[in-house]
Length: 356
Image 1 (cartoon, one colour):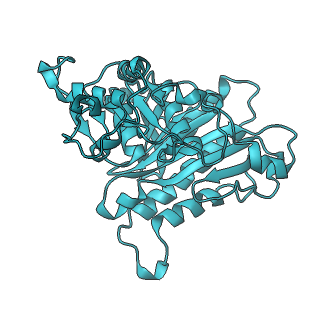
Image 2 (cartoon, rainbow, N blue to C red):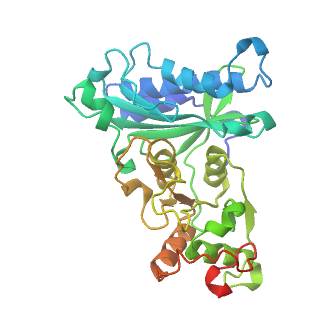
């Protein structure tokens, strides 16, 4: 974790001040992107306050995830610089009044990990900002404007609602974390220039799906679990929070790797994470922090979307670890992916090829 300034020489820098400084680097900037980001930060403050209420009064008749979606949608209702917005709660993109003349597209996951909210596990919000295609009629904008690869994102970030509320952001010049100082209601820069170390001894994967893993993933996990006496020569820790924001935050702050791999029998990628408003923004942040994000076979940021709610499989974190998994996929013969014996004895991470 980057050292924090201390003593009388410490300089408190707010999110607003940070964005002003970034804008000064681009004399032609109009300030509309800053306005959008500050609106999103305000939305995240309101969601944090709602989450922190704990058990909500029955008379509110509203789950926190519903509130979060409404808060994001409301952030552009006043006519901000958003041409259209998209989330998992929307079947189609939403175009606010006057949106067709605006510069940006907003894709978001209003409350990632909401199923964990009732057990007090950190939850979060994720957002991605794209440029809106120019001179597009509103009717066409809904259908195709969001189908851009993650590499062209203008900005991306997330908020995490835990013991502290943090707003983590990249506008294409590194990754910076801001902590909400509740006494003044401002996000303060506390984690400048977050960097993911190239190597790690910590990995996160849902081990209950091990029977579905492809051989390269089985190989990687088996080698990690072998510890210091195995081929990796060191002991690994395994984590799993089941909250993408929480997993990403841990990796950005202290390193590691997260794996949400393709199932060996899933040829149509029907069990992945949403590409536009989950995979792409997290991949953008990880890339800006010096890490790597991949499907296991190719960089996530290079995937060309073909549908608004398209799913993808995501592996991200320390660059050396992600590249190792990509190498294992490249080395795999490709003839064992569908060969998962139904009645052979299986250990937790046993490679099906070894059971023959």
